[in-house]
Length: 240
View 1 (tube, rainbow, N blue to C red):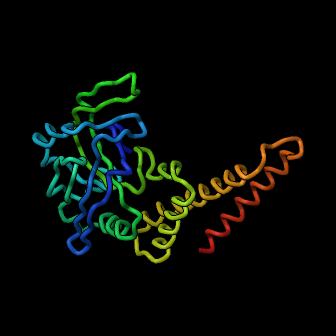
View 2 (cartoon, rainbow, N blue to C red; view 1 turned 180 degrees about the vertical axis):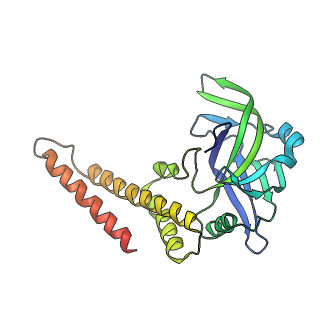
View 3 (cartoon, helix red, strand yellow; view 1 turned 45 degrees about the vertical axis):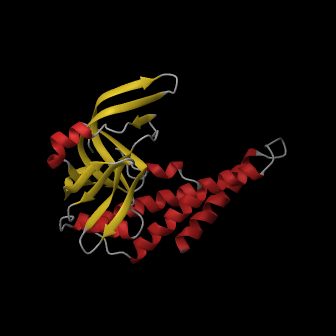
């Protein structure tokens, strides 16, 4: 786990193109003008100095893991949208090959940056921090809007249709894919979390359809119904 610099992931740090044969990926590591979960906005021009000074040193990593470098970037530049990149051909390692397969399966589709903030300013009225200059160390592929602790926390902010869609993608890739044991292990964790999240959201849907609980709704009956819904959903997804 990295702890000597900050990481930020973006649902809008998306994949743009994938060349499986050439083992190249292109897209955005971050975007300008979008307020993230931390209340931060990266301003256009924030990467100008670091790209000038460190462009050849910035790595492309797998899930922010310095032990799993994909290589460097052929293109790394700011445009009107954000920090655009085109990777070198990903090196011929099992984890890079797994990443390419996850891109192809539609599971890997977002990116993140590892950095230090050099200049920023806080707007108290907007409750927003504007990041004006960044020292960039690396850009990474991430499974789902990852943070620095786990690649799967992005599930918590998803709606039930979004969770179910991702779950189907993970299940299909898990059952039909050829990944390393490590990647299969991570996918199994993700699948279990997605199944639980889908079930929890089903319970919330059930509660929202009921009248506000009163004396006629005993707590034990409510809990029993919740358990029933959870079990039904878990059985459903296990059969798919």
